[in-house]
View 1 (spheres, rainbow, N blue to C red):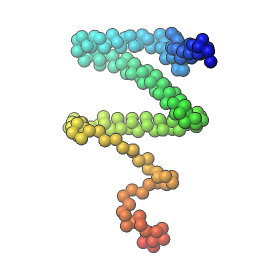
View 2: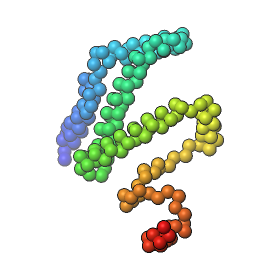
View 3: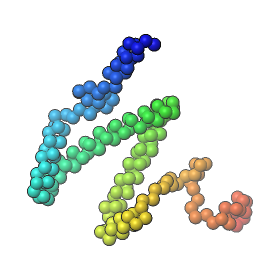
Length: 177
């Protein structure tokens, strides 16, 4: 390929990758006028709070602040739910529809599990929070796969099975009952 063709091809690809002034091409991140006003107002509230330290200001504008956070969370979720399956399809060559199904299934379960966890955390008293944070600082975080209640054979997993029970055949277990 001639140099001028390579340069032209690079320019064409670069143009396709540019984000237009009106917003990100894959997901509409353009804010409506009311959303823009909301974000501006919350920025003003934040600046005033930083100047004055007035907690009443936050209490009076709680609904605006929460709506602002809700909009940001929705936009971030939209981007994540588009980009992550796209990346999986890109490096695995799997069918997009199949990947989307499983991604949505797991993402919805993740959100529900996380919200249930947050709800429980809201009930912790100060000593529980301090104890947990002290443990985190002392031992560091420990991450693990949370069991879903099913094993590889799609059967409910047996909890707390003793080693002597697991060595028995099905007939021996029936006879024991």
